[in-house]
Length: 412
Ligand SMILES: Cc1cc2nc3c(=O)[nH]c(=O)nc-3n(C[C@H](O)[C@H](O)[C@H](O)COP(=O)(O)OP(=O)(O)OC[C@H]3O[C@@H](n4cnc5c(N)ncnc54)[C@H](O)[C@@H]3O)c2cc1C
Figure 1 (cartoon, protein in one colour):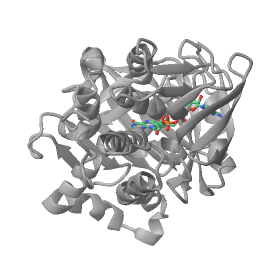
Figure 2: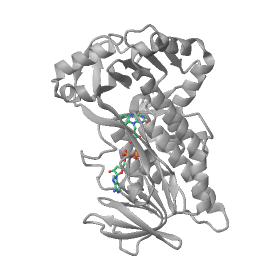
Figure 3: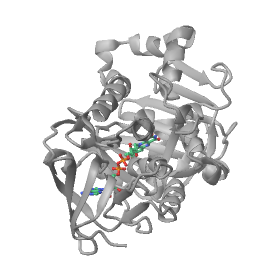
Figure 4: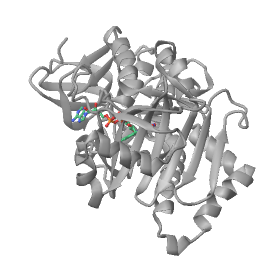
């Protein structure tokens, strides 16, 4: 397969990571010619999106993946979340979000990125109307008439590819977004997330996820099945180097001290990965013949596990609008009208989730003397105010805002 300079696509997707590949899987069902441009093969240990991380999928994400026929391929590898326990170190206030109280079978699922990646890439590589242009990059594109022309970098596919619509899905540090003239605001959290998997002595019901706020930053423990838990620990800039340098035993002691003994003694810590954290918000979700999705539109702190879930909703929305556009008399996947509808549909959900996630991090970052026991009261209040808890649960499950057909279990 090669992208000759004459290559013509209806939709060209820059980035075959979590969100770009999800979008391609949705669009593969439509009579469209799709190109996915990705620099790093799935088989590479250096693939930045499908790495050793594990993702907490919201209920909405599970339904979208199910509608795409992908869930059945990964379900046996997913761990279920039925409860989310939120606490703050050194304070009494806790809150529990419970699937039963929300009248749903599960609040979400935990799945290894690589498992989802294998299912999606397997699907795309076997689909006739999708070209996987990998390894290759897109760093610039120009618009002329009804076409956007992307310059492909890399030895295998060097040249140009034309499309009616270019989708920017190359992650939070997107160079393509900048090249297309779309500004983004980035604010560092001055924290780094350290992730990995551990066995615990008392896994409990194995379906409870823990969010814990500590003076050193937020952390999460997510059930991963077989008595294993995935940890996401944050370290402030002053402590990152020393934390990363800890040997397995010392790191386990640190994790235990931060999390406490709710799951008993924490066992051996395996491979760890680290991710500097920042909030990135693109100022627009579209420009001429281009749509911005996933982390390229919004890079979030992982404390509430919302980044991919939000990006998958971008993908489901764009796919729905493209399906509707095909049914119209004169389909044009990159029309101004379609792109304006995409931006209008996604803006509110994105704003809400950014505010929710950022508020969670910054609210708990405020010094104790400023908020005093109010922070403890905040969590306690969540527990006694069913309305507040429902909003928290709905946001966590990805149920805020207008739902796509895929999220409602319907075909595109
Ligand atoms: C520690 C951590 C834990 C997280 N946990 C969760 C969670 O539990 N739940 C959740 O919903 N989210 C979570 N997230 C967020 C989630 O990982 C991201 O939101 C998601 O990966 C975004 O996918 P993306 O495809 O938009 O971007 P990325 O994952 O950044 O993928 C971008 C892709 O574009 C490719 N690319 C780069 N440059 C170019 C170029 N020039 N041309 C073409 N392609 C290019 C890259 O190789 C990559 O494959 C977590 C994030 C972190 C850091």
